[in-house]
Image 1 (cartoon, rainbow, N blue to C red):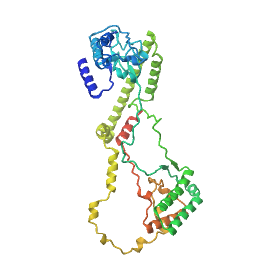
Image 2: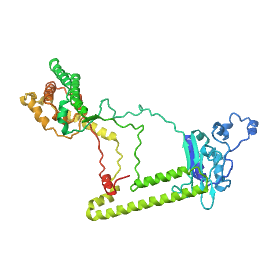
Image 3: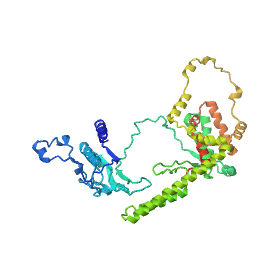
Image 4: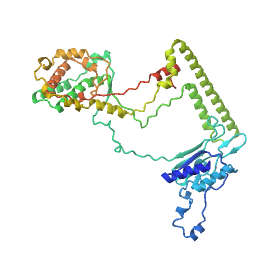
Length: 469
């Protein structure tokens, strides 16, 4: 085993030249054997190798770290063949055993294995000398029989350096220069009169002046866009005042803690029992008395037995519900059994959606080449080209469907449908300017596409199991 480890590590070092750390059960009892290969300074001086000694011999480099003990401690004084092989591996690779050298285990070398036969230290962290600069602390935790029957957890904490990612390296194709502040609106029919009475006369007069200026001076893109923004504010401000609309503020991911989802059957009672067990475990962690150790073992067995009972009860209830569904609702029954087949994971990236819709909006050059510009009819159609009237606007506004999503202007259909009649006159003037000039507001050329993934199988499973906890 140690020969294979040696070959793997030497290959990794030759290819990548990186610090290396191994952690786990080596089944090795090393006692207090020295894991450092000492090179006599007299030999180096006699051979005049002072300048190149560090390149030839694996000199002890732990002197650079004042928080690390050069001499390793170990409560287990016995050794075995695997322990001797582990020491030889450390010497040949210039690795060091972390146990008993640093952190809360400094000067101790605590026992990591405890059973009826005896106690020993067989779980280690071994690391290359250049890895020690990243170690924050090391400790051997108390034996928890819910984690392992005989092995104590060994905890290694590292110093992490936050690396800032240069966002200029990757150019996001979804990035846009369009400014959009989403506003969430939920219409309330009981507030129609309140909504109409909160319209601002000054803003309405300002909109009329802007439209009149466009008609007299000639329409332009900037002026038309500003008039449309003023119209949107005219619709939105009353809704915000009466509480129908409010700005959407996304939650920051900096301090956001996602809710942990426990596996099915792990209910509130299980969580309370787990908290009680962790509380006792933390209280008795540093205790060395035999009595406290027995209390902890007893509590661990009771907690394990309780969780096992709850899981068995949960499975029993699920089986009972499935039996009833098999005869009363076979479709639901087979949907639950085939949940693994229906819940396929797709590796499609959101950029694929972007490319798809981008291609849909691109012009087809081949079809344009076959188009004859001379075939366009130049005769005027008085019905189509006639100005919009107030009756037309009123008729179309009253037919607008409710409970529909808004566009980039944040204006929902209810705002247009239940706005005061005076605003309809402004709409008539705006539409006629667009009709006669052919200039369309930029916001009207932008669409919002929201991708919504619906997982029906998960909802069905929650109905049967009573939800996830």
